Figure: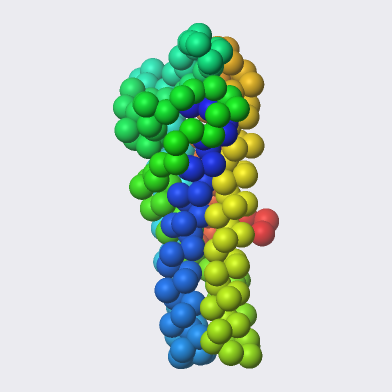
Length: 211
């Protein structure tokens, strides 16, 4: 509904990303390389799941645009004009209709299950391997636990900030319906293409992904 409320969407994603890493990290700290070797075997499966998810999310955005379910409302209230963008079902966005609106209002905290679930999938994929490979080399389980907690806190804070920035174009464009639909369309196409490239590299052995 406004850029600042993206904090709670991003934080939900960060929590989802952190939860499986915390559990898996503790197991690796306890059993060291034995578990890490097993994780290396299944990591591509999780990455494939990320590719499928990106394609699905991109298709969902484009489908909502086509059906006219993604739209902008521009209202004027006592606390000033505001714009919010949503589908026909506010509950799908985790929105709290009772929260005050306005670009500068962070709003009442809420938890978004969809964002949390996406974070879990991402957390189990490639980014997990980069972090978890360091754990067996740390001096103690307490150092490792502290590392996991700091990593998780950084993930939650940084993703909250990124989500706010991603919401700025929508809030700044105001009631410009065409511009908002164009931004959403680019995001949907980009998500679908990135997912398709990832799936191709994993399933067909191509090298389309430059990183």
